[in-house]
Image (cartoon, rainbow, N blue to C red; front, top):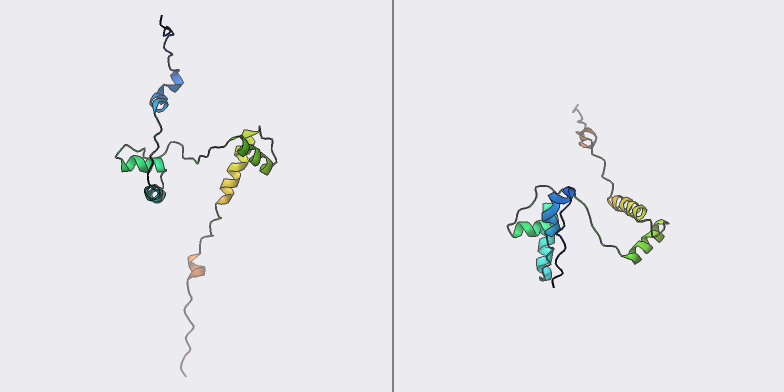
Length: 132
């Protein structure tokens, strides 16, 4: 007797554009440190993610611009507890923790130096003395 009598679920309309992404599989490559470093450095110089750099090296299609450029990190319960303490929030306030962490990441970027004014920074010619 087969238990496969359950009907196949239909993908909700709002997810249909993401079906291929839902079926995608993340692949990890076990390579030497030098390979990882080369990929990361190239990605940095190209201002792309390491995933995009790997796709480029492998000759796979790469989106011209990321749909949602973002930074990601995996946090577990103990991480949330530490961040909650750091920011004076409840560990359950995940949104508040994320917002505080976002502000901290933004503050990590050093302020840009004010643009130098051409007139103010240009050297002035030395005054010439007349010969008498």
